[in-house]
Image (cartoon, rainbow, N blue to C red; front, top):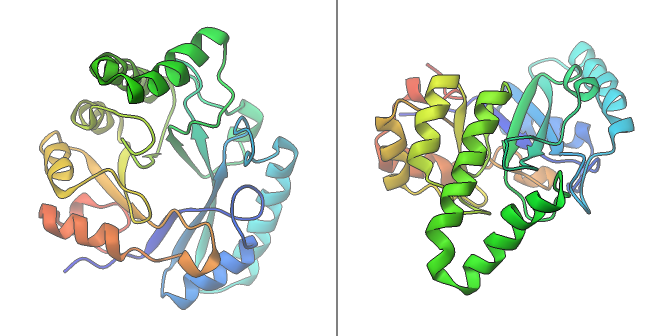
Length: 244
């Protein structure tokens, strides 16, 4: 039996979500959660990026909620993006100082660091969809870029690994285990099957089951991810948002 107490991946009106921070908090409380992270998109997302000027405002709003709302702890995070093959992500030191938790993943609608990175990350990944013979090479580039990001930044969670861009999730799991980073089993759009999870677990990786909610009604909807974890034979001790 695995019981989950937190949802560490939710979006609000500050990026791609449909509700306010408080809407997500109330939904989480209704689902019986005791922790919640607000993790809007990184600042270089073309259409849904969080505005850098809003981060301090979000920090103050969450601090007020934590002071006045009982029964739940709210964290401020951000779902940042890989923007270069050297493992850079779209976060600044000024933003990082306000965050409690850092999530990183691949998204395709993101401004890369350079023209070369645009070609290597987005151009080649799109080409690989048309020409399957390129897939293995670009998968290796994607994987190495994520490994470099894990070494370069203190990342708490890798979001939906393998969903947007192909990755060697076993190699990612090996480095994530070294860095203390959890791999997400995403209840909304997970590439991580039970087979992938078992392979990652053999590398010593830890996991987190999140909703990736973009509406308040989806906050705390963790059943799909939980089912994958159960099929993979995970125990509560391997999941960072499970009651031990």
